[in-house]
Image 1 (tube, one colour):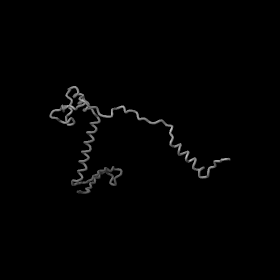
Image 2: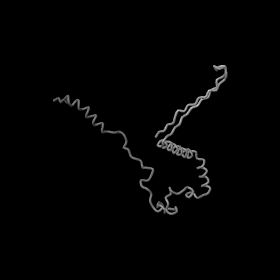
Image 3: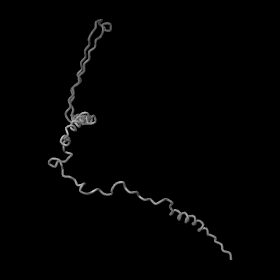
Length: 151
């Protein structure tokens, strides 16, 4: 008896899809193992890490202490004073603050009444050869435009 394995048409189209689905589950890549972190996972603790009591007078906040009170070494105070005196960035920042304050005052001045007066004057000398009378003349002209007031 002769047996033949003949696939039907739907089985022929489904066979490559089944093979592709089976192969997608396979991976040749090695399994990823996360390396250990170079730092501890928890903050250190113990007697060495206990915060000491505030060493500032009257339990003042460190940020509110003046730099001369914070740094007590005279040489260090002198160096900090020289650096603050010659610090161009700080000088520029201070000038920018002054410029902003001046601009604010200028802008604020617009709220006040404004008074304006305008006048104009001109003086010309006409030489003798261009004059109709044959003598040199000095011509003077004055104009007063007016006074304006605005709020």
